[in-house]
Image (tube, rainbow, N blue to C red; front, top):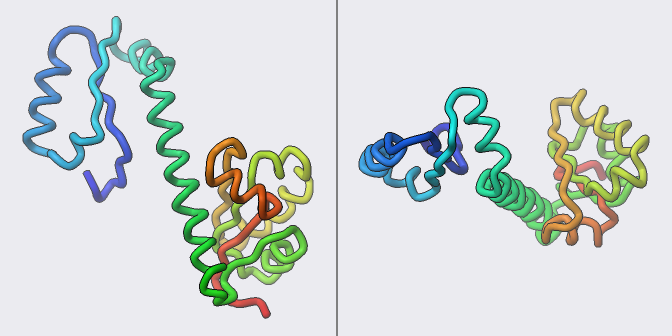
Length: 163
């Protein structure tokens, strides 16, 4: 399960079989079972999946996973800022220049920056994706998003120094 980078598991279904499966899961995959939840639903198949996705449990798991990913990505960026190793860039002009040179490995932007400067972000993210970099949009309401917004809402982890 760790090879697949599973963040959480929801075991859901009508009846009691889900509880038996949770016991099996706990015995055979104890580490993965720590992040597993059991939920009772009224139907199975596509309707059951839809029902699970509408539940607050599913929403909470998705939000927690997203927040954890945001924090991890921002920590990586801040690590480079702290080291002053030249592998971090922030601010529109610096990030755009890094993207033009193909140096951006990971582009970080807040949803606020996206709403306010969409055309510029789309241009930069296109450059980053063209050079096989990744683009990550953060929620400005989360802790990591608030920190990134304080830096202007746009930052990048670089593959190599640009200056």
